Amino acid sequence: MSAAVRRTGPGAAAPPPASHLAPRELLGSALQGLRGHRLRAALSALGIAIGIGAMVAVVGVSASAQASLLAEIDALGTNLLTVSPGQTFGGQSAALPPASLAMIHHVRAVEDDAAVYQVASAGVYRTPFVPAQETGGIGVDAAGANLPRILQTGLSSGRFLGAVAQRYPEVVLGSEAASSLQIARARDHLLVYLGDTWFSVIGILRPVLIDPGLDADVFISLPVAERVFGIEPNPSEIYVRADVEDVERVSDLLAPTADPQAAEAVQVSRPAEALQARAAAKGQFTTLLLGLGAVALLVGAIGIANIMVISVLERRGEIGLRRALGATRRHIASQFLAEAALLATIGGAGGLLLGAGGPWVYAAVKDEPFVVPAYALLASPAIGLVIGTVAGLYPATRAARLSPTEALRG
Amino acid sequence: MSAIELEEVSREYPGGVRALDGVSVGIGAGERVAIVGPSGSGKTTMLTVMGTLERPSAGEVRFAGRPLRDASDARLAGLRAHRLGFVFQSFHLQDSLSALENVANGMLYTGAPGRERRAAARAALVRVGLEQRISHRPPELSGGERQRVAIARAIAKRPLVVLADEPTGNLDSRAGGDVIELLHGLAGEGATLVLITHDERIASSFPRRLQMRDGRIVADERR
Image (cartoon, rainbow over all chains, first blue to last red; front, side):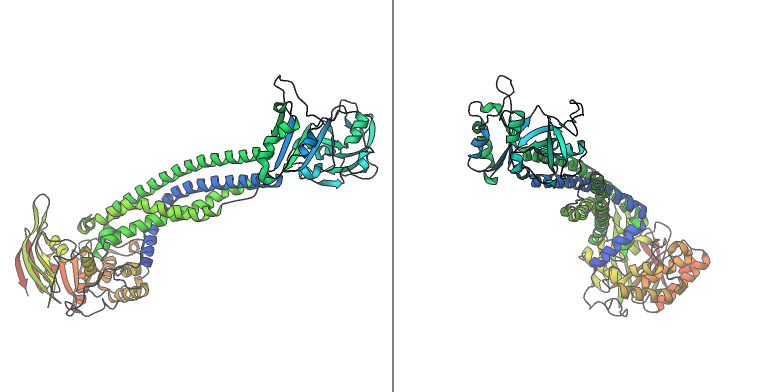
């Protein structure tokens, strides 16, 4: 304060003193200004908080849901294809030819393949005394030893069909089939009545994410199925793992390879695709909701501008006083701009906390990961800052234009 | 040395109202001047022009010898920040701030750091006799005390000139008397004091009195 603490002596020779407001003081003044009108400030900030909170909640919930979907897709691997019989042009159900598995096996870029053969005539029971029609919805399939590997599942107990299973009646239960039969784990000398023969339960599969329908089935070896039940060697489903780089090409080849005579009767699908489509659809929905959130933000911004204009009118006396105390027009404008920006930034930060509550509840209820994208953390107060600055521009210029005498008189 | 000089200053408002009409007057450093006149005589406009809150429509204003005609808004603001102190009839204190903060804010635009401002504010409040009221807020103070806070705010920066616009207008006669006495005392310490009043009794306590009517100075009496 050396410039001001002086005797009232000759000041004409000294350089003209400057009006100066340090940035830290500006912030302090803005805070003081907000302090003076706490309720009004809180309500204005609330408008922004709600808008930003809505957007954060939408983004968080969608990110959580997507994270879990994407995790599923990763677990599946995107290179799994399924081949199943469709319908002929005549509308009849077709069957895959017996040679289809071998033909597919020879397609270049097919890394692994396994077929499942439905044994339609057999049911599975704990004892021969259960009425035949109470199948419990359990189906019987014949399969090769590599089925669990290709399905990316394992065994919750016991082992899968091996060398012994090719000759003797051994069965592996799917996870749901096991619970229907009330068998918790595979152990020695555990038997089930399959068709009209006792089979030894040697293993229970974990749930199959890729094809949950298989969980309700039980699996025996192909030679045993042919010998005991006399099934036709037409696969009911073939699972193919293709080279990740070549999935498209293999996918196109599978139908004509499986049944050259009636390629149109073969259905080829990629389970990962369905999941990816779901993820994309969720993404579009999110964009729509974000748009609504942006509208809410716009309303909040208008609210702030409105409140600030009223504030300027109400604080004419204060503005006049500050001008008398040495504030330039720019200082006055900066102060009101700072107040609006501060208000909205606080609103943005508050909105972040509010909005994060949404995904938190969602994650807890749906047992999915709690995700709030990192950009939301930074963007929330930043968006608030930008909105507040823009909303405060008009009121700030109005305040600056007030003539000091008018302001002091009023 | 002169503090403020007005040379043929006029101030006209839209609608043709002439609040000041060719006024010429010089106020020396350290003088104590009262401006009296009926309402509408132009006293308040005289003060606002002297205080650089308004620019004249015609004529020249000089502050400490320097002409202000071509001074920018920023330059005038700097003058007000460092060299001028105002006391208003309606106090113009900020109710949500303490007396200390109000006075410290008076120096907000000088660029002095907060610590220095608060120290000067404290000293000024002691000088006006409000040592016990430093942390009180205006609603907790009497009218006279509030005006003394405003005076403290005006003098804390040791201005060249103190301009007071009917400072006792909202006070009872006892409080008003105390305020005028205080102002005289402060002016005695070196500041120039220009005070507007409609009260003849108050005016008569000043060594120099300017009588105004219809925007002109009609008498310039010295005791």
